[in-house]
Image (cartoon, rainbow, N blue to C red; front, top):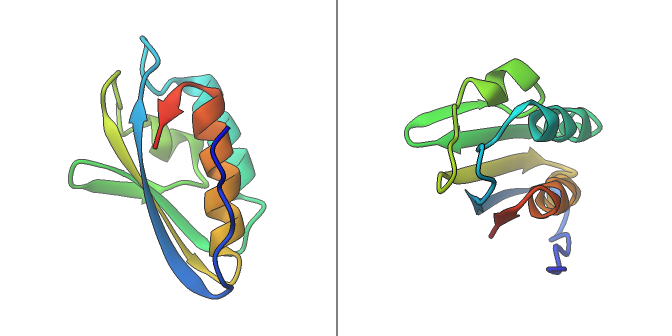
Length: 99
């Protein structure tokens, strides 16, 4: 398991992940990501290509239509951005994405 240590508070974090699942970013991991993101006060977005969406919304995440091999950008900004990026990073790792 990778070390997703949280950086100093009140910062902006950006991480990239490659989707490895054969069926891409589907409903189950999208729901887990959104539920986890909702626990944080930071602004959290997920991007694919030039489209960035609210990571706290399952439908927004699914609208990215991220297939296997897609490189997603996770951005978190706020007082708990480091914790948020670490938490969501673990979920990405669980469903087969790599940093």
